Length: 107
Image (cartoon, rainbow, N blue to C red; front, side, top):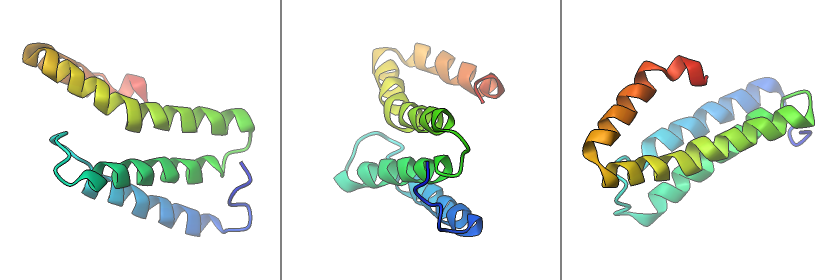
């Protein structure tokens, strides 16, 4: 939680924005991993950005919660979504429509 105590808020927020942009640029959207380091770079950038944001929170439990949510969101959810797509295209379509329609409930 006190990882970035000596840095200013502006520095942390700017670095977080850059890391999330790196995540968006290098994410393997097709889940084929043609260039193997793209998925790893994307995941590491997203997790590190989440750790930077968690270091600004006021309690250990809040920091733990945001890092755990980031691991689930950026690490586990894409694998689950890919498994659903391999199982059934129709189920994947229903799942994605459900997530897109009810995204505000999860946030």
